Length: 382
Picture 1 (cartoon, rainbow, N blue to C red):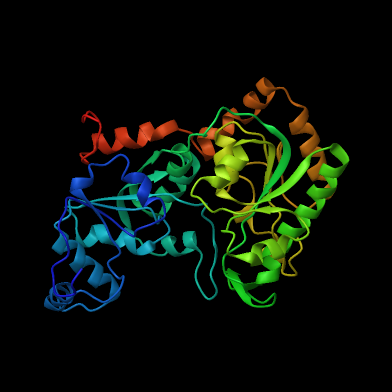
Picture 2: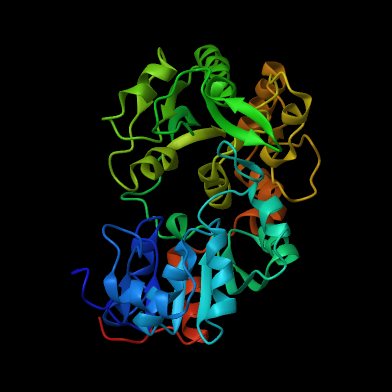
């Protein structure tokens, strides 16, 4: 787009591109939607002029000016932890704002930043018409700090995944990697929690330790062990990090889902994908002990990475633990693997809608869109 041309106009604006914005286009009338990043590339001159006319100069006011020029009736983000988004409603009260959850939320943050829930609790004017959340627990947490209505739709990416073939579980145990795509030195400051620094090594040490435990367990129980990588095969640092364990790469949008769908049992620390597969009824053991060995007591006792946060659940349960105990992990694996399908289904049922709803093909999402007046493809000829 020319920097001198007004932003494209459309009833529906989705920003930014990515973070599952592609999924939304499957359900909306694309002739009435633009997907954009207002700050991408060079700044737009008509937007700058509109901002200057308001005598307010900031990155946020540039966004407001941009959205005004689009004549949007609906603004949607799939970056639900972008606090800026929840300030739009105050300036554009006639626009319907919709945030869609795309990841687990807590209070550890990038260096020198404030935790998400801490930050939103400090601004009494945050608002959003609708927040579409993974499950009821997170919706209630958002409502404590943001004036909003929530609807539990689950993970829209998980809901849109359909296996390429009939489910045939292979005799393998898979660990779900959370490794970042930034190669950093072990002592570099990677995150903060309430003013307490967390180094790269301290953040990810638990992942390698858990994999060592799991590899040994698999060798003793005749299972294949595999790490489900988070990054593409071009990011060799992930394979190096988990060496000597085998790592699968994520080279296609749903390649990880295909792998996990075909596995007997999954193990996750604090990956949203672990909750996604729990919602699908798969056998998952969740370890909430990422910082169990951290030297700082405040970080060690962080509740944000415990199973089900921010739900008020027991510290340990039938398919989750809160530390890095190898014996407790083994016990959960033995128990979960030995259950009948019906026993497992009955066990996890109370947690599914609470934490992560599963809604195949996003039927709740599309019906919600239709109900609030978004231009969907419901009822349109194929």
